[in-house]
Length: 188
Image (cartoon, rainbow, N blue to C red; front, side, top):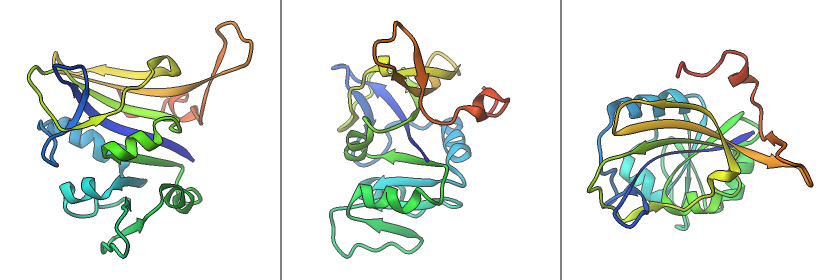
């Protein structure tokens, strides 16, 4: 199973990666929403309860997994877990790729474990937020696809690099890349 993060963020004045404000996304990018749907349909999407609350309902044609600290929390059409690892163990035998879709706490818990990241960079001035994607080390990932839509948005897929002990610049890319190297993907 590939564990992937999918996120859109913008940098604020302090250099933080804004992902939300007042439990909502502080921008509207229809093409990015289409990409999100295309990438995640048919897979499990793992989200925190606040992210689920902001969406308001389970996402269609996906296994919706909600992580919450609240005991006895139930949502028709979704699986609810109080422990992230239990949730991942539940979906691992079912899905080849599992998407972490937010929010901040889940991104913080999974950033050091993910194989792949799908990132939409939003380059707009003046975006403020109260929810942030954690700082991360780009050197641990290799860009495998990228697309610059316009001056305001750029999309990229990054794969975690597994460096071999004592190697001089040699690396392996984690996870199954055959889909991308054999003509698959989504036409970027």
